[in-house]
Amino acid sequence: MGKRIAIVNQKGGVGKTTTTMNLGYALAEKGKRVLLIDFDPQSSLTVCMGHDDPDSLPCTIATLMELAMADQELPDDIDQYICYMETNMIDLIPCSMELSAVDVSLGNAVCRESILKN
Image (cartoon, rainbow, N blue to C red; front, side, top):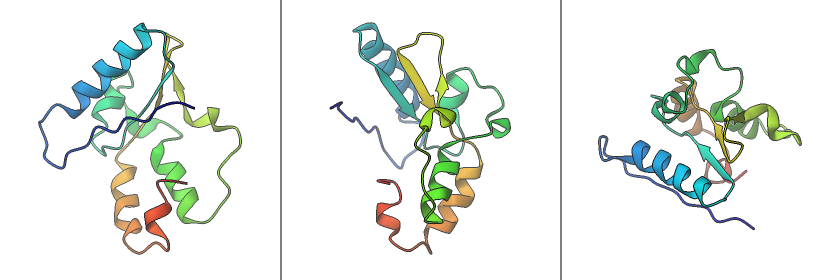
């Protein structure tokens, strides 16, 4: 089983995106498989990883969270939600502005504390 590392802070401009990207690359250089998940509606990590127009991506973390909030089955083939990078060691579940709407909906969601877990 892999380890999970979360880099979080409510304050902006403290280096969360930079730390996440650099830590991901460092772990990949050590031979570890890395999955980065962008949870920022500004999509900074998604853009840093090479996706210049995150709002045009068909599947993002917001899509997965919407499925979970609607009590729909999450896909067995999660590959459609992952952007595979050229390194083959770092993958990304991108984000877009759509996450802002999900954040608002999350306030009224049943069992909202387990949406992210699911």
